[in-house]
Amino acid sequence: DAPLAMLCDSPSAYGREPECLRFISGVPTVWDETEVLAGEVGDHIVTARRHGDVWYVGGLAGWDGRTVRVDLSLLPEGTYAVELFRDGENAARIAQDYVREEFLLAPGKSFDVKMFPGGGFAARITDVKFLGIFPTAADIRPQFVKLGRRNSFRFAETAFPKLFPDFNRQI
Image 1: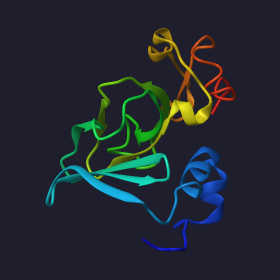
Image 2: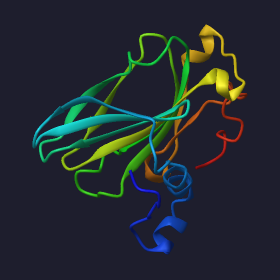
Image 3: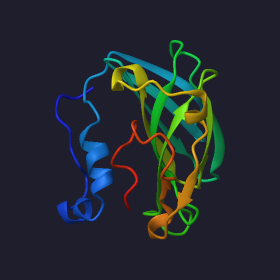
Image 4: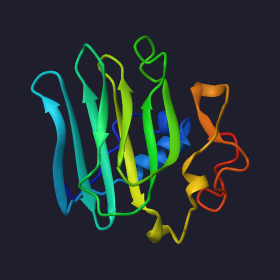
């Protein structure tokens, strides 16, 4: 834990990626709880950290890459909103290639993430009750529409607009 946050790139790099800046600048510097979810020395690691009622999960791959199942069974019962930044399909060649996704995580609480060699992911996970959202079962099946820039995704216009009201714009 460190009381000060640091962004380790030039300011112009973050200016080009406002969604990344928003995510990174919102990550706390002090934690209430830390759990290692998976890992093998020299190969990969997946760690979950809680600050208040919000969990942050991060994973790093070794030089072989891998797909990991992020098992969040440690979370209390409920439905969770996930904001995920993960490697894009070209990340093995272009390290800056990423995908940003938002989705609901139903009870059972796990999802798979493909990490390319030397890559990884970061996620913010919030119980929807703290967002004032009460999704139906139909909301938990998001529809993705692929956008051109950076292989980013957005939800179809009908996919839970109350949960992510400003997400149906180009990111």
